[in-house]
Length: 94
Image (tube, rainbow, N blue to C red; front, side, top):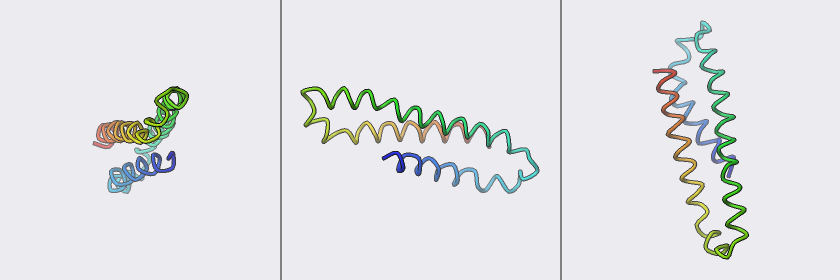
């Protein structure tokens, strides 16, 4: 699911940033690119934050229920990351 997570965030960045970047080829966008790299690392750290919750629930008596509904945690994390990505892009590329 990490590929889906990173893919959605990458598409979001490309859709938002692509029209803006050609006008900034002079080098003004390089600091924004560095910030986006740091945010990509932070998004993957946030993805990993779900692992302890997943392991805890996999080892609990709620295992069967959790396996049916664990996609909810994925969607909630993906929507949160997408919203934060959109916000940061709006601020950086305004």
